[in-house]
Figure 1 (cartoon, rainbow, N blue to C red):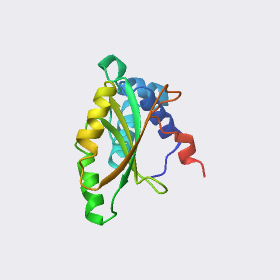
Figure 2: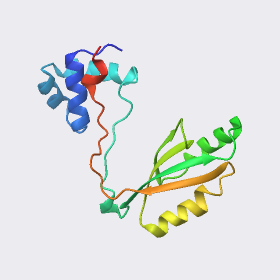
Figure 3: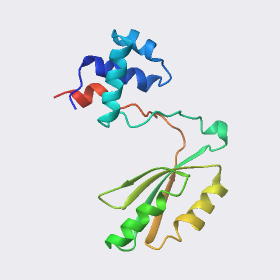
Figure 4: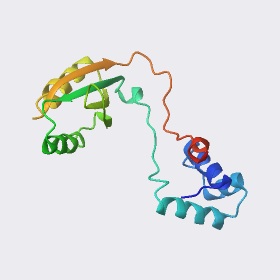
Length: 158
């Protein structure tokens, strides 16, 4: 989908604050309310806007331990990969799961309450999965940068 400058302003504004009203968005983009509604509908229907979410403070909820887990599978039989991919969908501790090239097969971004929760998740949940061979876990000491915002200008630069 081709994005113009107004689409970019609209998307940036929504990434900053998805609770803006249509009227507030219209003011920022310098369009009518109906013009903004049409653009939003087009962006949603084309799949540029996937969903609207609320970002929570994990620490305030008692989920202060952020970890990255490298997962290596014992085999790379298609069914083992499909089964692992499906199983990961069921674990709320897993924020992100990426299949990789290189050393490990997957990189998981997980959040847990504490070391005990981490140990339980690794030993009782991940390790028993049939295809899992090894896990390598790193604990984040401090988050330097965290964002969900996609760099719109970089995406449309040609």
